Length: 256
Length: 256
Image 1 (spheres, rainbow over the protein chains, first blue to last red):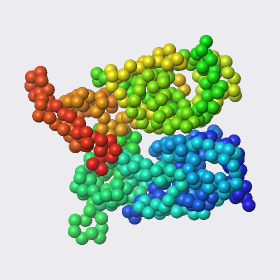
Image 2 (cartoon, each protein chain N blue to C red):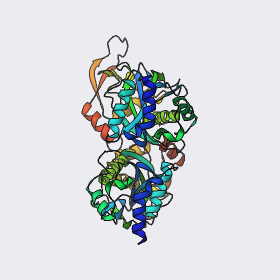
Image 3 (spheres, chains in turn yellow, brown):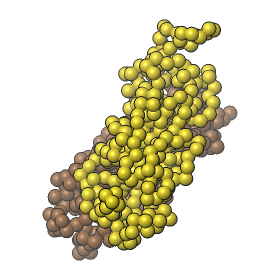
Image 4 (cartoon, one colour):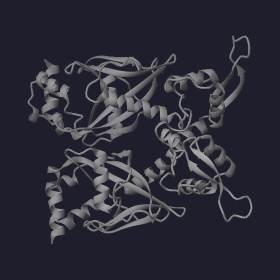
């Protein structure tokens, strides 16, 4: 079977193409209808769910590798990803699941670069999941979105990587603007607040939120209100793209 | 000479001890007397200034490696360091300076793991430089603090690493508290403002700064004013350590 040959080839000779000791794991968060989800693959050989991951080609930039890996493994293309943390626990790559893997693939421990130590660079992205169509690759039996409150057991330290990505996302929205590719062009203050509440996973005080977000200067208030609302129809807002871009680079705190 | 043997040994057999393809570079910022400086080594063989850097032992955690490297190369011990970015430009390790190095050490290109591709994990720290005593190691002819406005030419992409660390520090102080180990236990608002101004390298509006920093909740105002000031003696403040710690973890924005 082609698939088995491909796996064996990767285990026995992958180090001729890829850098040893370094992997990339992608935590892709999806937002839609006030729900935060994460994209997982079901790894055929491990029999477990995993983050989409892979390796860096010998001459490839790491950012390009992250994009290639995500595209190859899930079909998602041109997603803006950012490195967020490096996972380097010396024992992280040699846990039980690998022993299982080893038996399944029929390769002995010291025959393969895949059983050497790996540090993993975590990349993260936030996408509108109604706009992308994930597709599983040959190594996986499924590629699915999971609500972050219902994550199945993950291989290796992938749960830790996911938790750290979530922590990083929650810290980032305190000083980096978000929402441009997640909300419609015009949105109301309650809609923006729900985006923040979903990511932070808690209710925010309406007045405090409004004061802080307006204080960042990234919003333009429109004269138009939302139609079909009887009392106190909420005003529409747009992002001020110039200030949004500036805030993306410089942060929104003392600098602004 | 022992030194030459040590260098040759490292070039020819270092990969038996260290992970291939991965290096660590440390950007240590020093703050004292309203000046921001960075710690550099003068590399004997390269004939250039460089960030203190090194490699990860095969069984070592990356954070432990960063601390060991900084201690071995500069004498600075028990410094709290954080990873801030990974540098992965495929050409970053094979620039001109390496050719020079090669000739000086008398090793041919394909004899040494040191001429393979490296990605580098950047670590950063902020210390009170009056409290530490840097000492150069055997590979370096000097270990000195440089004002960030007077940085000499650096090897490889170290200037880029330094710039990114500075950018990261400036973004971080927008949402992470700083100052605990840099200021005296009691300090005035103008003293705290000067710390921020030095790091951000620009003047801040006094009233805006005061409003924002008080809004974070990490300060306790004392009843005591600074002695020896004639008019409007400024009050002393202390950090509220519980809130400071909480802000270190969770950020100081919408979360707080």
